Image 1 (cartoon, one colour):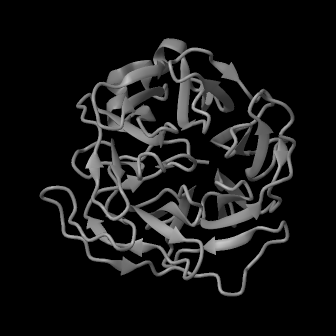
Image 2: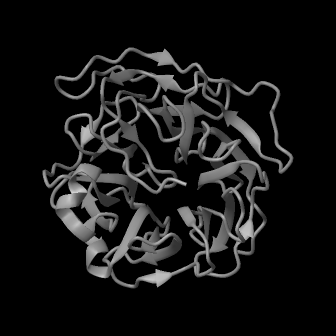
Length: 350
């Protein structure tokens, strides 16, 4: 359950697609292709609920935030070096056929790069988007084309961080959340933990606010754009509250609508490829650890997908062909490093 943006990690490696031959951004370090040192599933490791292991990082690293490539043959991920949401963060691309070993090609000392599960990799843009502090003391939005180098999208100096970006279906826009860094919250008073949602064109320019956290007394995070382009889903709570609900909003900031209303922490929402369902993480029913659920995009009764009671399952993404749901899982809860798994998507009415 990823409910806080990440700022100023100690160190990071930005992992690009294998075959990248260029350098980093101007003045940055030169890429050196390497392979990650995690565990590649060789015997089809499975859980009792039918989930199949995709990748388990080694050395205490935590593999998180799976996001399918548009063709479904590979997956973008974030790997933390010191455990769940801890230490250096890096991006990798995991092949889903063949070796299933992420590729490392670029290292950025003292920086961090984090992607959002869901629609962070876009076919029309030919790129994936992520947040990084690689050129500043706060998170900005970036994008990268396969085989290319990081391109900075936003530039701002108000002490906040821009994070959790995802693409519009046509690749023209990026929606994201604005969060205030801990060291700046005292100066912002009650705007701390009242994150807002914005959108910006992929080639830069002035961001457009969609949901005003401070103006509504709410905390709004992890926006994912619908494949139909007509709605953006996100998680929302009353500022300072404990429970999270799923909401949607139109891309022009109108039409706010609550999707889930049961008590609990409903987070990490992403869309089914046809835009009719949402997949998310939840402790619905007072579960000791969050599990993966799906619910109709217009609301209704959630359907539980994973069933490993002793593990935290979260940050899910739906495969482009609709057959699989990928997710991160920590065997003892969120305190332990996570691995990436996938499970067959449930049969649902269209």
